[in-house]
Image (cartoon, rainbow over all chains, first blue to last red; front, side, top):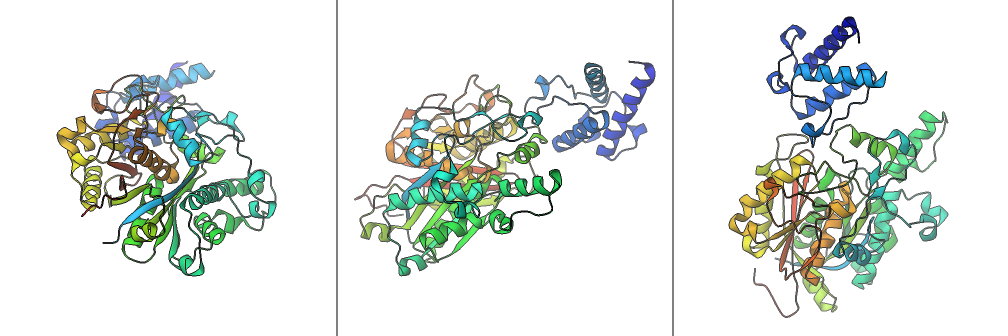
Length: 91
Length: 410
């Protein structure tokens, strides 16, 4: 994956999470957790839907076992990395 | 106060096409959940469900009837017929006026909606079957039950998501107590196992791909089922005067709202509902030996429900049994409370407590006696059935063993 594609993934994921959290994208840092951003369980599900639509990927995420999922939602940065690997796996 | 008893039960579920077939399967801990057989299943990520097998509508209903009966209506009619037959009631014009129907269903005629949308959107057709409207309406099953049996009293349907059946049965209890009816056919029906029904649920990411494992630490979500259960609720003296076989007494009901979240359960709301039902039944917590849990197998529900049970029952929480039969028949959404009341009747009448199957790993957050994997024999004088629906709508019903000669003074 090129640096440019990586930056695009990061930008799009941050845009989606910012919209979900009703924040400006520049206020969303890679280190932030979803809790920091005030995104609740329904917000997580809606954000993952937006991510799937934006990147045309299938995100393996079960709200009952977030920790058992390959899709790591601990922080904004972990979500970006998870999306990158799903894009790589799809290619 | 007028007392209410149950004099008939009927069911069709993934566990069997009658009430006894369903409860025998429950007592054997059989699983009715398997691979889904629906159109376009390859486009679903969830491919299991508690689907009814070995049921061919054309062997039960005529072509003319089927043009008006959505699958959820068929299920309700099959269950109602069995319940009526068991009750032995003969509906005269006078009794018909005093007999109602209150059925729960969340989705109503979903199969009809789906087929019709498929026709106009996917297949580009410009017309749908002329009876789509009377077939899909939420109250169609209640109406057809009333027409089939000549029941001209209060008839309506209740749609409160996963609590629909419990709300319906609670209202049936109220109708008889309030002398607005002597008999009410009540319960619920659901047929949401379709491409669209599953696709919608997939979105919430709370469905399991492999099994429903309520209270097990490795649970990973709910599994949908389909079917119906219908009961004959009857005023005690009415039933007694005709020497009816009384299956149980319906002694308590309570409902309330969390007013907090559209999907997340609330411990507080569940506590208030269970306490309310005990109060209505005139029972102490210690009187309840069995709870049929809402027990969906999601992380959130099972944890919250167990906390609520501890709060309501205190030390007795460690003595009572609580199981989720959804592990066997799946979550019937608007029909689920009705099917689960079958397990409560089996407990108070036959002394058999249905298990929670697929239980593999104890969960410290669900540290109650969840009757793992195998049914148990026990004397149960009172059983409670919980339903805690999306939208925070809670409905809890209590049934008590009825033995001729024992007349409670409550």
